[in-house]
Length: 280
Ligand code: KIV
Image (cartoon, rainbow, N blue to C red; front, side, top):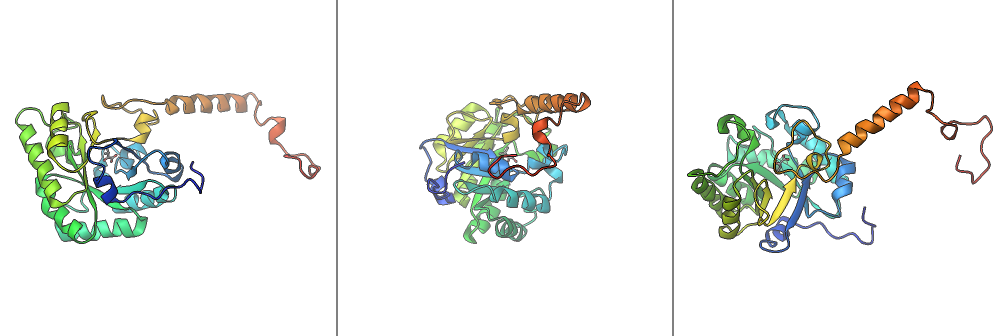
């Protein structure tokens, strides 16, 4: 964690937008205060992703995630951040119906969590909504390519942008940039397409399963720490194996309890109060 004196001011969406073509933007998802605290000094922005449904709640997809879940996790993450900007996902069903519905949901998410921006999924068809939100003070990060809230129409978690799909995704990227999005997440698209969007569209591209040439990268934190192991996408690099380490620690604790090796003498309390200054 950063010391109070070393603290920098969290960037604003306009600062993120200005990083186009510069040092790559660093981002991870977070859903809890301790995780947010761990990444605050290292990330430019932190996403309270609707992946929380699968990662922390054991749901089969992001479709069952609600506004109340996002707000509860958003408030927890906000308590752990001071240097990184917080972006929050708009959950499925909270914005697709109309720009007015999207505004009401986005305003509630920002007001009740302190997030600096919202993220929503969709390309050309969401451009009018993005424009409506941006004109009313809501900074929007777009998310195109594989959009997990649409797995039922996309036919699963498939690679996007191969063959004729590439032009459709290019058109999505141009439309959301023209509508005023300050950045765009490109998920699970071909590297060629990600590089093309990055060079032809003037807002930062944030890759997840896209290209090292993107203007930034994002991963689901539980994936890269090896905490979520139900499956591993090709685009995830595991930087730690905390799930395995955690299970080994729990097994050691269980053995110690069963063998009466825990608690040890240092964990129990004597009849006499310890002398002043003693740690016990
Ligand atoms: O919900 C999420 O975690 C996301 C990232 C995969 C970008 O949208």
